[in-house]
Image: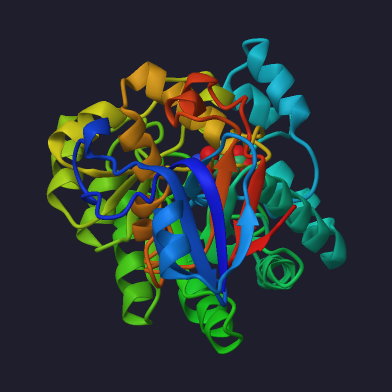
Length: 408
Ligand code: NIG
Ligand code: FE
């Protein structure tokens, strides 16, 4: 058993409502706090003095500098398993070229598919570990990772096997998701319906028998799959036992309604969501995941996070880290920038990076410093939690713990 502290402040982020607006007054702040961990789990939080009396035989790890302790962040939407850069796409985009012009020049998702298919499985694994470890050092202790740059049997299996191998080479928890329904690959002989049918009949049973993932995702968009095709796909995948998440309303509406109807865990993107979609998301038991990194990468508007919260939705914030639209991968910076633009309170941002993101992944033991939860924690070099968003992501954690063990 270990007692760690004293921290200037501990924000356990327990008992925050999972839906709707939050004010900073709702945050519990333990001044001069401590945390007791054992076997990778939280045993207790409280003032350091109280815990010293309560657990007199504990090993004590003393914190000798000002520090604010938070639960580790959860990035519930990433594409960090890929090979190759899309810096050419980015250069064209910032120079004003259109999506079509970039695609015609050989850019877009297909470029990453070509490069990822050609990559050695070892390289894919290493790339994923390096990105996961960068996230971990920045306080992100749980990371969802999608396939979706394979788009055929070998390509998707390679990616999901690389993600599984990566999980045993990083301390971060990786949650794999099959995004074979990212786009219909150019070399598939058949239409969208036939491609989705192939995923359902041929790919998903293999993923199930190899226990590579229990989650599916689909990109609903004019350039990807239609709402009608997605509705059928998600229904069939649910019947097979897959949990769902959806790339919805990024450029056009229709996706969020399908995600809600399908009982998906989350609807992600939502930059184009209108009032009708916002009402549907708020009324349903679904997490609305906003991806400011994609807005920054594409130079487009943010998802209406403020409106979603005010309507009563559960809003999580994720990085969408991918080689095309969101190459930066700095979750805290993106959340901080979003909070200034959309007027989100610190409580809303922190809940969106912890308990609400945990809900998007259906994880029940992370995202809070509560007895019984994993001791996934991060400490920032300040005495007042408000400094963390004030520095807009420039202040990074000085220490991160994964299941009670320091990761650096
Ligand atoms: O979430 N929207 C679709 N898919 C990714 C982009 C992937 C890519 O461009 O490689 C996204 O933004
Ligand atoms: Fe994405």
